[in-house]
Amino acid sequence: MSDGAGLELPEDADVVVLGDNADVLPRLRDGTFQLVYVDPPFNTGGRRDRRTLRTTRTDDEGDRTGFGGRRYTSVETGRMGYPDSFADYAGFLAPRLEHARRLLTRSGTLYVHLDWREAHYCKVLLDEIFGRECFLNEVIWAYDYGGRPKDRWPAKHDTILVYVRERGAHLFDQDQVERIPYLAPRLVSPEKAARGKLPTDVWWHTIVPTNSREKTGYPTQKPEGVLRRVLLPSSRPGDRVLDFFAGSGTTGAVAAALGRRFVLVDESPEAVRVMRERLGSGPVYLGATGAPLPAPDAG
Ligand SMILES: C[S@@+](CC[C@H](N)C(=O)[O-])C[C@H]1O[C@@H](n2cnc3c(N)ncnc32)[C@H](O)[C@@H]1O
Image (tube, rainbow, N blue to C red; front, side):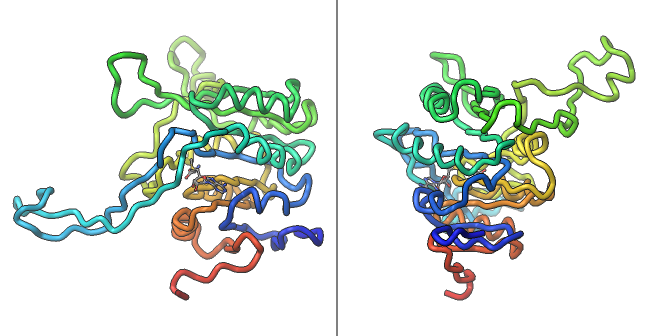
């Protein structure tokens, strides 16, 4: 896919691009994505880092106890993460969200995943970019883990703002939404209880469990179940999906499982390394100019 000035993206291939999305987005062609999902840094005011613990060694003074009471020391092999502090968050996001709108098909939808810090500013921004009539939903993803501060209500939800390119022309295939159990199944008929009910705009879903198959170790990785709920009604098999704050590649993993094509962009080499491990040799891996990235063992 290219229009001369555009980034050379192979037709009918999944693509992972290492680069600043500000450089990549202007080079993608108008109206070529059915769905854009983004999960930008939340502006927490620091860095989002995670230690990568790969090995342990026996050590009498070690910090961990293993089989037979033997002591071990954890050996930190690296850190993964990204900066998450912005003096002008709206100024950072606005041009990128304008591109998101330009890149959507007429029936396309944008999902922007945020938390309490910036969601309200972004909603105002998105109303300006898309028009208020194109606001579709404010989805609340509610989870329950981690500490509980004593001086306020523990914050245990994220906000996903949903905007469509053209209200009325947009795709929302409710039949594709995975149904959930009724809270009180005995209050409805056995047929209804067996069928389950449609989820609302409040999604209860666990975070990525520590020892689960999908856990990559990348900080702020989102659960595949949340992305399934995003992709199923708002895209069809064969459609192209874009995530330009891709992190560990959750959008790509779910798109591949559901038969969608994907383009993922992240500026962090660590993120692209994690995506390679997760997505394997299926996608094409490119730099921001469109040149192929060397395979990891090619040095
Ligand atoms: C919250 S994380 C995304 C996590 C992802 N949804 C997942 O499930 O793993 C945000 C990502 O945006 C990336 N990022 C931040 N600024 C960027 C930029 N200007 N261009 C491309 N990627 C950027 C960071 O490197 C980080 O991986």
